[in-house]
Image 1 (cartoon, rainbow, N blue to C red):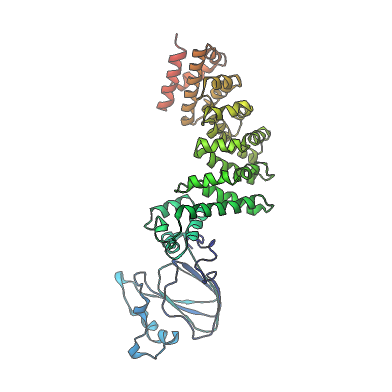
Image 2 (tube, one colour):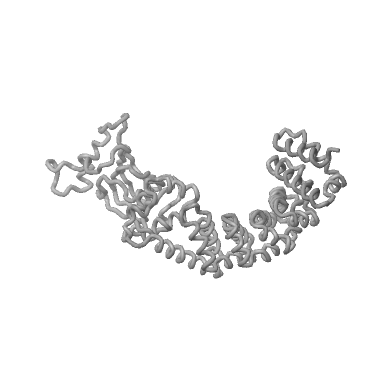
Amino acid sequence: IQGGDLYGSLNDFPEDYGSKRWFCVGTGGTGTDPHMDPLGTDAWNTVIKGHKWWIVYPERVTDEEDLECDDECSVPIPSARHWYASVGINAARSEYDNGDRPFHILQKPGETIYLPYGRVHSVFNMDDTIAITANYGSEGNFDEVWKTVVTDGEKRHWRKLYYQVFNKEQRRRARESEYWHPDEYVDDEEDENVVNEEDIHSILHNLKKRLSGDDVNAKRESFMTLSKLINSDGDDNDNILRAVFNSRLAESIIDGLEDPSYVMVLRSLRVIGHIVSASNENAQAMIDAGLMPKMQALLSQDSNEPTHQLVQKEACYVLTNIAGGTDEQTNELLKKGILNRVIELAYSSNRGLRKEAIWVIVNVVSSLDEHVISAVESGALEALYNFLSDGDAKVVAFVLQSIENILEVGTETGKTYAQKVVNMDGLEALERLASSQNTTVQQRANEVLKRFFTK
């Protein structure tokens, strides 16, 4: 079956249609006329008791009326029994393009039939039957489902799908479809910007309420929804982020860092990562909401547990974005002593954590001279040189650039950083990398040697 149910979260779409799931009981001799299932849905049907005779037409057959009984040779109101006795029983004789013919299927107890969207079919109960069936919006039939929601639903329906259900790839497909922008198809005369603001406010208000509760599953789902909302690259992304701060939801997100469950902490960190990576302004708003003390508390916990190291890795990702922001934001890491702990984590046995910690250091030493000097005093130069033995050429190239920047600041400010490198046997690492097979690493290592260690 082609994926999950995209309609699953739209309990009231379409109105008066119900859940799209049925428990079917039929007497022998009853059935359906030829039809195509509605709403762009796929379907499945499982027989518990009895037998069903299915006739499924090729994909090119899309008009059910072409398959109806002829009025001139039929009873006034033909039943399924009449149709099967005349048209249905002869269906296999009909040949379509490429030699395609209808399928005749006898479904027995315990058997399940899957019916993809777009297939005209009819069903006949051979005897008394009991069955369970459902229609659903398949991910494999994405384009038709999106079209149906946009053209048959209301604005709240497509917005819920787009912002709370779709993943990033599905949002891209929606934007590239002929039904984007959906407001052109939805019958809604209200001012678009006002509706958008109201929708966003309503969604965030509910999320804040759920994050403040004790229901663990509700909290997890809320963080997942926030990730999708904030990580959206749609037109409303700026409005969503602004609303997060106006509604004081940022504080609730940050409070998630103190949750006893590491899963919840991870979800909180990933939402925070989306926010701070969007812009320096958003990063500053999170700092103002009280982010840094709780980040410091997270990093200060000393544990080699894999789950704890995963949390610290995500925390370093957040700090990398802050360190790459404004000078004032970089100073937050130095002022609160967070960089000292990050430097310790740069020696972790966990390679992923070690790499994220190095990225924080790289960004810090790319800022003001005073930040570089403070970072070196905290041990940044030693941590960077220790990482040169890592096999990730991309990161090593950036580390070499950072080392060059530190040595340049040392030359300009009269600091003996070059001698510090010699004392830590750093020349050996530079000379080894000067013969690297990676061109960028080789060039940068040679540049450092040439500028600061050639007499």
